[in-house]
Length: 320
Image (cartoon, rainbow, N blue to C red; front, side, top):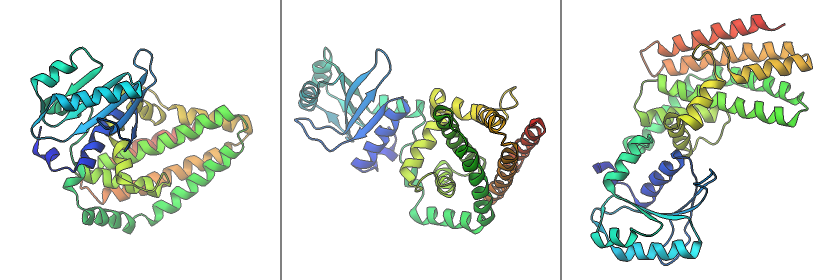
């Protein structure tokens, strides 16, 4: 286990463990509930076979974790009627601790195993220990200095989307389009941050600011960090979904989001509104590219937006 993790506070280490469990497909609650052994996190899985409740303890130790701590955890598992108890540590377990857990619903994850899991599931240790609050403020100010037109063009795009969604009287279709719309915006924000070619910590600061300007939250860094990691590491739940709502991808011309909009526009005779959505989307993507271009000398982002605009032009041509 690297030195970075040893510089984290107990709460920061707990958040790292929470991100890891979430990236593995669980929903996770942070709790201060106390029992004989205490509970740091409660995780839930709703998949067949694995479904149930999991009690998790997070111990940032440089030395050993002994049998008494494992015995306490076992008591909590029993009282909480949990499927399993998991203890994650940066240290290692004594032989007696391992022996006690052997025939019980307890999983012990030592520092070496934890390091492997963090790498496998794309969780960086202490990513924000490398970027100061001053740097985050500087990045946000740089974005603000060159994004006035972005906000205007994005507001027009978002406004036309709301006009179209207001006409939809099918609740299931409305929910599907709304979810894909949010997903598309997250995809574009992640792509933009990646194309900035900054460090990962700075990428997340950029991503956080863009989401805030897109009115997708408060811009809370820890929340945005979790979303960013899930996009990068959890292919089944995020990457494929994000890719499929965007365009172009693989050999496909168009993603599900735009197909749904075309279907709705046809049903409600809203082709003019759809054209406005596409026009304003092109405009805001162009302004977003200018913001990201500020952070890099590469023209990758411009190439991506050009491909995007070409696809949108083809989409406009296909509207009856």
